[in-house]
Each structure stands twice: as C-alpha cells, then as structure tokens.
Image 1 (cartoon, rainbow, N blue to C red):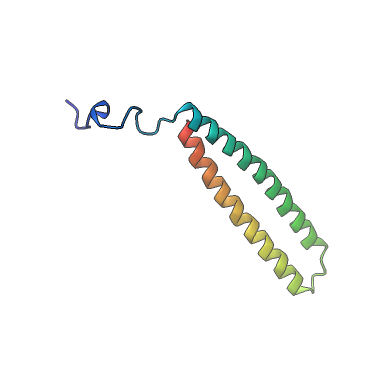
Image 2: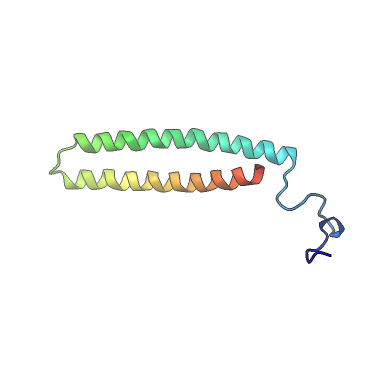
Length: 93
C-alpha cells in the first residue's frame, strides 16, 4: 500500500499532475519560441548599449548613468523572461 492518494479516483483528475494537453503543449512551445526571439533581441540591445557606453565621453556621468539604468532594466526583463522560459520548459518536459 502506498501513502499517496489514488490520482485516478480523485474527481477532475483525468491527467496526472504536471501533464499537459496537446493544445497546452503547443501554446507553451509557441510562447517559448516568442521568449527566445525576445531574449535574442534584448541581448543584442544590451550589447549595443554597452558599445554606446564605451563610446561615450567618460566624463559625462549623467549619460553613463542613463545607459547603466537602461542596461539594468533590460537585464531585469531578460531575467523575467528566462524564469518564464524555465517554467514553460518544465511544463512540457
């Protein structure tokens, strides 16, 4: 005998926990593709901002601070997208 409840006997549990339907899998894969494209764009944008920072006048602290803030915002978005990507990947695994 096991200590776990029988999943099949619980109402509304046709699929085991974590299982996804074909439509859910397709939607997740579509979102993953979208996230990957967005991550590519964000990475390129971050690289461009870093390049602009390298070309900026080093004594223009205000401009450098603006660019640093922009990079932080972009990196925050990257982090959020990566977390979502991981969630979706686990769903369809």
